[in-house]
Structure formats: structure tokens, C-alpha cells
Length: 278
Ligand code: ADP
Image 1 (cartoon, protein in one colour):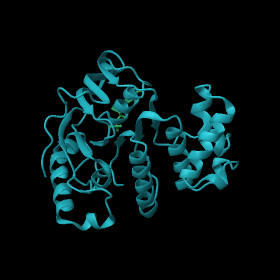
Image 2: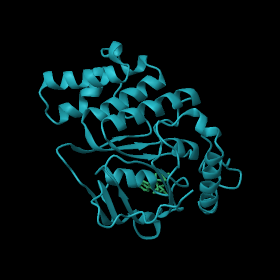
Image 3: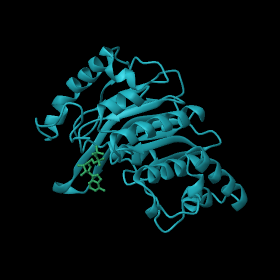
Image 4: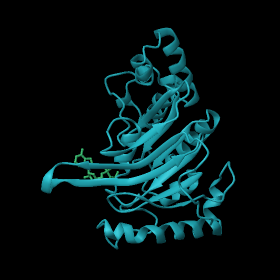
């Protein structure tokens, strides 16, 4: 399993470029140094997975890339084309229960003041792609967890973001559904050449999905290693049984174990997850 060196790419212009990014919360004796300094480049169209111990600053980093949180130091640049810079799918999906499925998917377009007819057409197209067309006028409370997650994916992709940010989006789903949604997500990201930054607790999920797996240290999170899973796409379930899969999984866990212990998650943590069972 070849290490990827370095995690910044001199010369090439990356889609996302993070340099010396730090974030602290609070003041004085209660100050928490949550993140960094962190350097990371993500190429256009790359699917980059981030793993790291609980509390190491993964969500904070995503929120900084999304523009929802300011870094305390350093900078993040998204090389923007004509598309919307970034869309984020948070852990709780972030969909609105009082809006219909269609209105949820149209939400970002409404914010961008896309004319109603065009917004309806684009939202309808995404509902179709994610198998939700029959539920356009349903309310999220009537949907299963997997369908709610599809609504969140459709809503994020409808704004055609340069970068899709996903914070453990499948953590609450059962294993079968997670596999189906992983495949769907990969297919749409590849079809639309969307750059993705995906945070997960599951090493297996990171290996299945990632062009690259970035390993973060315990808080304050920094990049300590990167690996490129050596599997062709489309990746199938069979790859999970390949010796190279087990070897990469073991190697990543080896890199993480000390960090997880430092983060106080303890030795009882199962080896296939980072900090908590998935
Ligand atoms: P992760 O996603 O890796 O689990 P987070 O980015 O959520 O980690 O949090 C990193 C650290 O920053 C944690 O110690 C967390 O308690 C702290 N933190 C995150 N957001 C805030 C906030 N808004 N106020 C204070 N502390 C925060």
C-alpha cells in the first residue's frame, strides 16, 4: 500500500487548498485548540475520505471548508468555476421536516434565487436520479432513514457544488442500506465530476469510497498520513474480501491506534472503527 506523499501538490492547482488551518474555541483557561495546523490539497473530482479519532476536529474542518466557521489561522481556498463553492451534508441530514421533499431539494436553489420553474425542474431531476420522484410532495417524517438521506444528498447536489462535504452521512443507517447509498453517492459524484470530502468513523467505508484516505491525529487534528486504496472502480463488495483490503485496513488502524488512545477513546475500541463503533 503506497503512502501518498506529499498531501499538498506543488505545481498543480487543487480544487481545495487548505494551508496552516487552525481553529480554537473559547477563551483563557477554557480555550480548546480543536484543529491544526492542517495542510491539505484535494484534486478536482477526487473523493477524499478523512478518518481520525473522535473530537480531533474533522467536523470543524468540514465546517471551515463550507464557510460556516472561520479558521483562527491559515486559509482555505476553493478554486471556483461557475458552480456554487460548497454544499454540506451534516450528520443529522439537515433536512427540514416542515418542507416537502421537493421544497427541501429546491431549498439551496431558492436561496440562490434560481427562478421557480427552473428550480423545480432541477430539483425534480435530482429526485428522479435518487429514486425519490414519487415522494416529491411527501414530508420527510413519512420517509425511511435511507430516503431522508437521499433527500439530503439530492439537496446538496442540486446546487451543483464545486465540493460536496459529507460528515458521517451514513452512520445511522444499517449496513445493507449504507452499501447501497455508498454506491449511489459514488456514481453521482463520478458522473458529475464532483469533488467530495467525506468524514467517516469507519475505516472500511473510507477504503471502499476513497480515492484517498487521509488520517488525522488526535486533537488538535493534523494530517499524519495518507493512503490511496489500490482498487479499480467500480469497486464491488468482493474487494472487501481481498487480502489487499485487509492489509490496508490493518495498516490504517496501525496508524490510528495511538491517536485514538491519545484521544482517550480507549483500548476497547473495535479495530474496524475510529473512536466509536459504527
Ligand atoms: P470531530 O468531528 O473530529 O469529532 P469536532 O470538530 O466536532 O471533532 O470537535 C473538535 C473539538 O472542538 C472538540 O473538542 C469539540 O468539543 C470542540 N468544539 C467543536 N465545536 C465547538 C464549539 N462550537 N464550541 C466549543 N468547542 C467546540
